[in-house]
Image (cartoon, rainbow, N blue to C red; front, side, top):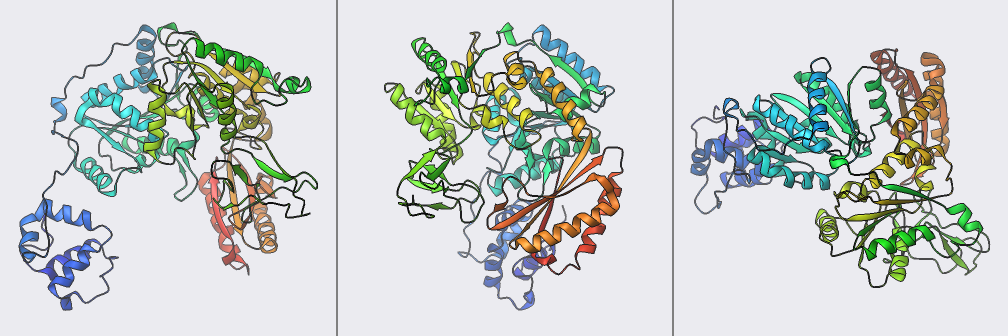
Length: 638
C-alpha cells in the first residue's frame, strides 16, 4: 500500500493524510499549516475513529508515525492485531474438517439441497424441530469452504450467535469470524478489514447487520430460522429485512442461499411451493424422537366453573408440572408479557392509568414498584387515588411474568425458579447467566417471554406451559396467527429433546380454533393453507406487495389534513390499491400521533413505477404548509 504522506516525518503531513481520508473530521476546518505540532497530534487523537487511524498507520507505516511523535508525548503499546489466532490458509490448501456423520434422512436432504442449487439460487430447508438442520448446515459450510468460497451464516439473535459460535469453533477453528452489534468498534473494524483483504475462505456467523460486510468471494448464505421477526429492522434506519437482503447479496455474488426453518414464513413457503425457490423437506426428528404431547386447557370453561378463579394455572398444567419435578425434569413457562399487571384501573369509574406520552396503559412492575410504559420507558409512581374521580379504590388487572413467578413460588416453595425477560436480562451476561443456570440444572423452572424460544437447546425439559395463547392470537395484525403458530411450535420443540416425549400444555379460551388444532397435530401445512387462502382473499402478501406509509406529527389536525391530501394524490396514481388513512392500534407514541396509509400493490406491477409515484407525491406534498412538521417513513411487506 502506498504511504499517503510519503517519507515525510512531520505532523502536517500526517494531518493532511488523515484529512484526505476523513474530510469530515473535527479539525478539517482548521488551517493545518498553522497547527502546532503537539496540537495536531491531540486533534488526531480526538477523532471519533482515532483507534482505527492509529492501528492503520501503526500497521502500515509504524516507523514513520512513531518517528513523527516527540518522545514522551505518546505511549505506544504493541498489541496483537486480532484476538483470533489466525493462520492464513490458501484456498487450495483447505483442511478437511472432522464432522459428525449424517443420518440417512439428513444425507438425503443434503443431496437434495445440492441438486436444488443446480437450478435454483434459493432453497428452503423445511425441517421439523430437532431434525438436525444444523448438522446439514455444517456439511454445506465445509463443502463451500473447501472450494475456496466465503460463507455467511445468519442467526436471528446475538444470544443464539454466541451459543452457535461455541459449537462451531472446534470444527472450523480460526476460519470462524463472529460479527454483531455487541462487539466493540475496534473488533468490528478488524473483522471488516480481514474480510476485505482475506484470500482464504472464511465462515462468518452473525446477525442481520452482517449482510453489509465486504465479502469478496461469497459462495453460500444460510439464513437459519428465516421466519424470525428479529431479521427485520424497522427502527432506526436503515429499514430492511435481513433475509431479503441476504438473497439480494447472494445474487450480486452469484452465490446460493439456503433458508432454514421448522415453520417458514408464509411468503417463503409460497415461493417454494410455486417453484420460485427450491424446496427440501425433512420431517423426521433426530433419532426418531417422538413429537411432544400437546394438551389443551379450556380456560373459558374452567373459569365458568370457577376452577381457575384465583389461579393462573389450570389443573392439568399444575399436575404435569408436579409430575415433571418428581421425575427430576425441568419446566418452561411462557407468557409474552413482562411485568406484574397489565393495567391499573379505578374500581369506581373504570379509569385506566395511561402513559402521558403514548396511547397505552402503564404496566405495573412489582419489583420496581412503578408503573412503566413499554413503548417510551416512562415510569411513574403508583397513584394513591384515581386521577379522574379521586377514589382511592384502585385495582390491577391482567398478568405478566412477574405475577407468574410469584404464583410459582407459592405453589412450589422448595423449587428454584428463574425469570428470563427484558427486566432480568438487560445485558448479554445476565441473559447467559440465567440460561446457563437452567442448563446446568441449578434452577428447575424457567419463566419468560419470547426470549425463551430463542435462548437455548435445553436437554432436560419435560413440560412447557403456554399460559395465555390468546394474547398471541388476538393481536390486530394480519400476521398474528402465523406468528402465534410459529412461536408455539418453537416453544413446543423445547419439550422432550432428549429422546423422551415431552408435554406441552396450552391454556386458551379458544380451544376449538383451527390454529390450536393445527398445533396439536403439528400440522404446519394445514395452518399455511388456511392463512394463504385468507391472504389471497384480502390481497395481502405473498399475493400483493404491502407498503405502509407511517406518518407522525405532534398536531392531530395537521396530520389529518396532511394524510387526507396524501391519500388523494396516491389514489390518482394507484387507484384502489390505496387504503385510506387509518389509525394503528397504538395511535400515539412518544408524544407523536401516528397515522397509516396502506398500499396493496399487485406483484405484476413494476416496482420502479411505484417508487416513482411515491417520489412524485412526496415532492408535491412538500408545498403543504405543515410538511416540515410531519415525519414520514415507509415499511415494505412488514
